[in-house]
Length: 394
Image (cartoon, rainbow, N blue to C red; front, side, top):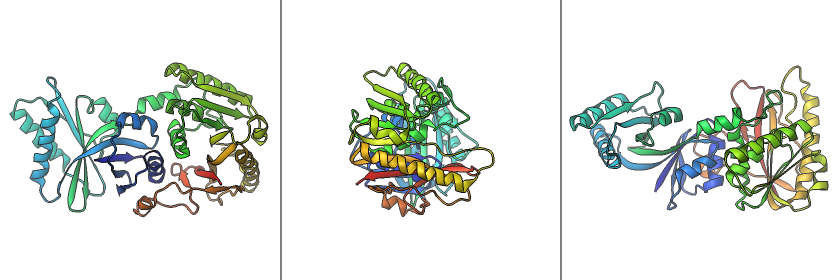
């Protein structure tokens, strides 16, 4: 079976997350935002999508046909629609198209021809379009294409056209609620987006749901909240700020109630990270997942001074992480990358930085590699980017 994944804007991060969660032994990138995975495994697209932060759509490749035969493309999709319609006994059937890669298909003539053929058979059909090249998750969801219709994915691969069916889209409403609807927000200090927290959790690759997850810079509790939703049952958070701990407590309590989560043990304390091993025993955890203080975000910044201070803080924190981590345990951590400045270089003796991007995908030409095996996350124009670092204890 061939599954496809429509990736977010950061190809490297999305691909790394998928590889961490699914393995992707037989995978390739056909475009910067389109990944194909061939596997004997059968996945539940909805369940997998709920765990992913960097994927927009998941689906399955239904047919592969010659790229030179436009009439065959129309007939093949017509047959797929006819088969799909068997599960719908009444009501209007909706369908739409998205294409990925450099090649742009003539989707409007194709859709209108299909609609005429369906109407000729007295089948009520609606052709869903968009001004964009692809249908967004919002358009797919609002037009009920996954429940009362179908979205077809078209992508050209050499001399072939791959025709896919979307099976799941990113739960944008749920993500927005967890981001903007949480009871305690700190827009001044900044907050980790839930999607990025999901990615970091997946990069830690902790298979045991009972294993403790530690966030020693827990802020408003985003990582702890997302870890709970991912199924982890034992969570520990700390922060030097009493307000942060208060916010964390409010937010994780809200998540527990909202999603009816039971059997989750959470402990949050006001503590300084440099004393972490004094209140967490040695070899306690398999994963430290955290976004530490990234330095001042506004005003005049003395970068040399800020970078030196952060390097000292992170070095001391990593020393503590090494004590509480089991051998082979991971630190998934964010380091700031200040625009126009050299990357920070804290000491991480006893660890190695892991390259989370599979070699076959790295060679695709669609992924821009960093100087060190890390992944940079951010939008163009930002003054401070996030550098996602995965350390493994030797």
